[in-house]
Length: 91
Image (cartoon, rainbow, N blue to C red; front, side, top):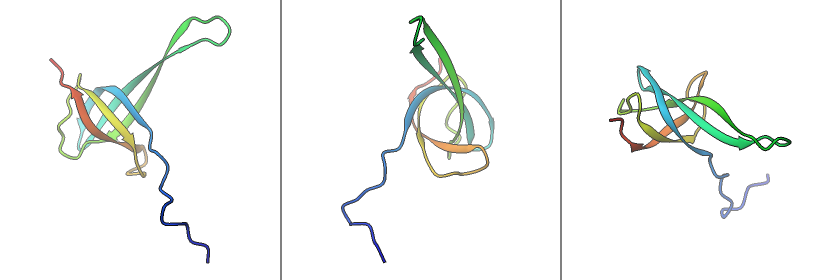
């Protein structure tokens, strides 16, 4: 049997900051993360939107909130992220 050494830890989990665009589900929010990146040839800045479904255990997030989400184990067919904190509340 080959066991991993006790000092070895699991990989760092991805963390993203985005805006809640939907909170209509129970314990789930849809978070849109905007990624700005330069075109490799023309150097124009492009916006790339990614929508993640994230687990919100206490249903605290609402549309317009800015939240920090972290990668986690699969919680359902589409949920692989969870809400870590609410960075800014919607006005």
